[in-house]
Length: 167
Image (cartoon, rainbow, N blue to C red; front, side):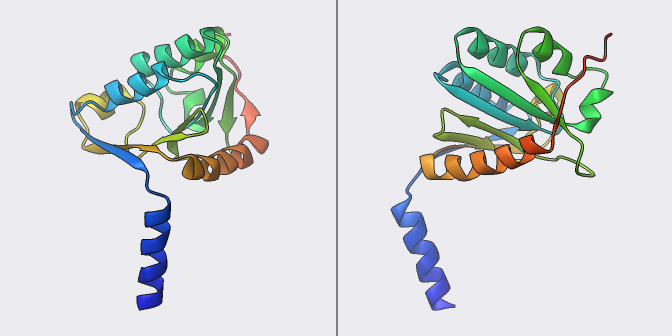
């Protein structure tokens, strides 16, 4: 047991990351996501279970318009979700896929510029910001971002291109 704890300590010590934590309701989660998206310069990879937040969707579109390569994978529930931002993203040129391989694609992550990971229980929704008890971590660590990117890419391989439900 002591060896395991020492190994964990050394791993944490070697990979010291800058971490910010936010809580909802009304604890600045959406603002933290949007702020980090506004700083993106190269890539944004998203996996989301539920995605109905207009400010976050707009920040992704704004990043795409700045030349940032934005790619989004959503749970299959977003095909029929009444207020999903999937159609908005698609119409604005953001490549969007559906991960239907799993009973629920319950991920809630963003990987920004290969060095920042946003994760936690926080769904990218208005309710998550204003009503639910949720948490959000913003972790600035390139090694962790690489691990999350590898997982994101594995999900992309079995995901299907999102089809506009308004047609």
